[in-house]
Every structure is written in structure tokens, then in C-alpha cells.
Length: 541
Image 1 (cartoon, rainbow, N blue to C red):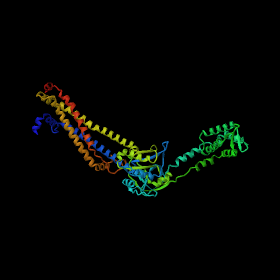
Image 2: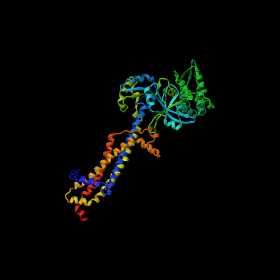
Image 3: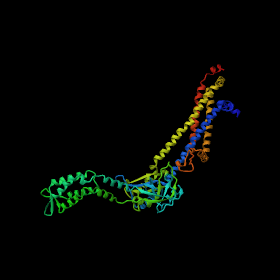
Image 4: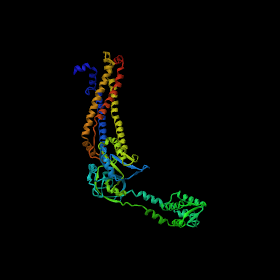
């Protein structure tokens, strides 16, 4: 060893300067080494835990979300329901790479628990699909997920905590299907009655009917008067009207359209047109607003009644993962939305490799083309639906890596300051070396070796400490939680065990990055020291 150090005088001096028993400054250098180690350790721990959380989120999404969602849209781009979904699902199941298909119904509903309400997003699942139920059972933390044809529900842990729900409680679910019809009916009641606001126009239309002349088997009217009646009706139809009044005006317009131009230039109508015209106009009555308002609500096609569902299970959810608030049986979802037994919103696919789901889109679309034109189908992958969430997590990892890298950078600056101090302290020794024939590069290597040693040992120690913290992360979390500080609360990440993904390439990159920063920090004072004039330094001895 002595022979080796005698051959490499720069390495020998570097080890001598780093000996903590010799000078106070060397102890400070070792403290900076510890700073580099802590910086690498914190980066490894945080990035590994965030990688584990991302993998946990993906696993939860794959457990309750379709890998590919098949929807049908009309010419206006509006999504329509899919009838006979079982036949379509059976054909898509034979596409290579597709594991299973199932019906998908999801919507928002109002959930009431003993007078407390909140909007919830529910997903109706096919209880006959064993794969889907098994994935849901894996997330259940209380009760079970044995959903069948009954009025049952599995709620998320977030909803259960916010609304004080336990297994066995009953929730009442109000559908939003009638909200649009009720809103339309309410808007109808705000419109004025035609007989009150447009009495003069109705009077003119009645006069037109009275002026119809019976000639043989026809009733005749002048061409100018017919044009006048057309103009009045079009004017009344050009503004918002109640549905019943608009329908009556359209009936009058149809009567005028049935007229035929006679040889004498007048317009001929069939026998009984005058009586039909008067009958329709007599339906417009003033002072009957209350009765008309009630008629608006009576015309709602179907009122879907709320459902009382028993909570049979609570599944683990986190605020960091988008997930449904309720899982309910498919038949209950169809009843809430007023669908027939074979009607669903979409058909969901589970594929063998969800991480490369884009490769499945082309064969699935080819299978769909045999049913309807391909332009009517839309395929939405899990990545399309939750892309914003994963981009957010990726940006969080980048920001955390950027911010925590400043720990190693600060340590590197501290090491640079120590190197400057050492160079001043050892100025005379360096001058003697140069006077004895040492080259500037040999002087630079003294400080460069110090940086290499500190960087290598600090990075290696940081990796070891990081792996040690990850190994005993649960014990450390328990200790921190016991003193009132929990860096990874269960309510946030939704799992009792902190997930971790150890990426060895990431570990190596963090270690190399810290090593390079320390080496670069040691080069700057080394170059400055090597330019010192040995004669001037020796004169000051």
C-alpha cells in the first residue's frame, strides 16, 4: 500500500488531507460527505415511493376501469346507447389479445344518507362477469363484493368516511335521468301563454277561418289571405313556445300546406277545413296558466324512482386516484337510467397487455366495422381517460427530483468552500511541492482525488442508506406517526403499506449525478491553487 501511495503522491496527499484526525477542516469535509449521502438517500427514497404510488394507482385503475371502452356516436357526435350488447361483446371477445368483455354503465347520481346528500359517480358492473368481480374483491377492505341481482352497493372508503357509512347501512340513490326533462318542463312554465301575449295574432287567424267560403265540395280562400296566415304562423313559431302551443301552431301550418291553387288563382281546401281551423284555435285559452303548467309536468315520459341500496362492502380508494364512488349491479344501473335489459352505454374490454393497449385498437375497430360504419364507433383507452393524472404524477416526480437535487448541490458548494479553505491552509506545502518539481497537474490531482473520494463514498453511502430506509419504511413511518408526523398518510395514498418500486437505473443515475457535482465542485479550487506562484508562497514562510 505504501509503495502504491509513494507512486501516486497526489492520492497520498489527498488521503492525508481527508484524515479526520489531523485537522479540523477535514472533519468539515466529512460532514459535507454526509450531506451528499443524505441528498442521494432522500432522492432515492422519495422517487422510489412515488414510483410505487404510481404503480399502485395503475393497479387500482386496472382493477375497476376498462382497458378499452367502445362507444357508439351518431352523426352529431352524441353518444348513443348500444342495444344487444351481448352479441357485440361476444364478437369482440374473439379479437386476439382481448381477455373479456362486459357491459358498462356509469353516471352521476344524488346519494342520500339520513338527510345528508352528496353527488356521487356510480358504475354499474355485470355481476355475471367473474373477472370483473374478482378485481373488485381485491380492493375491498370491509365487507365483501358479492354483488348479485339485488339492491346492493359497494362504496368507496372516501364516501364511507365522509358520510359515516358502515357495512349494512342503506343509501338512497336518486338518478339524474329526469333532471333534463324536469328542467325543460320548468322552462316551459316560464314562457307566457300565447292567448295572453299574442291575442291580436290569434284573432286575425280566427278571422281568416271565418272568411273561408264553401264552393261545392271545397272551401276557398284568397291567395293574399293565405299568405297572410302563413306569415302570422311563422312569426308565432319563430320564438320559444310551450310544447303544446307549438304543436297546435304546427297543426295550423299543416292545414295551410294542404291547400291547392285553383284555376281562378284562389286556394282550395278540403271540406271541413274551417271547422278544424276553429277547433285548433279554440284550444288557445287565456287565464289557464296553472292548468297548462301542470300539463307540462304531466307530460314527463317516465319518472325513475330512487333506489334504496344496502352497503355490502367498502373498497379502498384514495384521493390520489380517480375512482367511482359506488359500484352497483348492472340491472340496478339500467333501472336508474331507464334502460332495457339488453341496453348499455358502452362495451368495456380487458386486454392481455394494458400497458400497450394502443396495439389493440386497430383489430378491435376492424371487428366493429362489420357491425356499423367505423366512423360511428369511438375507442377510448384507460390512458386517454386518466392521462392528466399520470402526467401530473410524472411532473411531480420531476419537480421533486429537481428540488431535492439542491441538497446535493448545496453539499457540493460546501465542499468547494472547504477545498478553498484547504488550499489556503496548505498553500506553503503546495509551494514546496511545486518548488521540488511537482507539475500543476499533480497539484490539481490532489484536490481532484479528494473530490472523487468524497463523491464516490458519499454516493455509495447514500444508495446504501436509501435502500436501508426503504427496507424499514413501515417501521420508520410508524415511529414518525407516533410523534405526530406522517409523511405518507393512508388517506392520501389509499394503502396501509407504502408501495415502493426500486429502479436500479434510477438509483445509479442519482448516484452518478451526485458524484459528478462533487467532482466538478472540487476542480474549481484545484485549478486556482495550481496557478499559485511557489516563490511568492515560500517568501511568506
